[in-house]
Length: 209
Image (cartoon, rainbow, N blue to C red):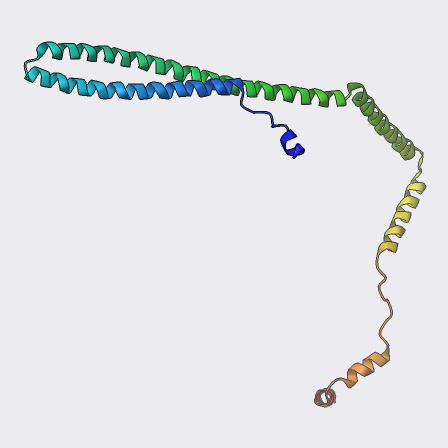
């Protein structure tokens, strides 16, 4: 139980700007409701003034129209107040958006600063210098080797390279087929085919005779 009641409430995310915007919107809604009541009253007062004139009560009709005129002026004032409230509400909401943008830019700049701090310029220059030295050294070695090898050495290198390539190729059987294989193949030939072959041989002998 102590843990339940002793648990802290999470911090409210509602800012003072949010509260101010909420109050302005509440005032706006109240003004709109007030305008609706005035508009209904104006409509009724006009109808009542017509009836008073029909009954010959001109003075009362005039007094009622004066009241109506005063309420119309109030209605114009409420329109101006509503416009101010709307403008102020929009300004606060836009200021909140700008504040969020500025906060985002601030965090972005901090992150970029950390990245730049991690990328030390001196370290980068040292790495580039070491890389360049390694490339220059390799190029120097290549030049020395190419200048000291004779044509005989070049031919020996090519021969060694060819031998290595040959060793990597799979072995291919080079034995020639024996006569036994021919005999076996001949046994597989049907008797009719053999007869045809002998007939052709006799025909060729007859022609030659």
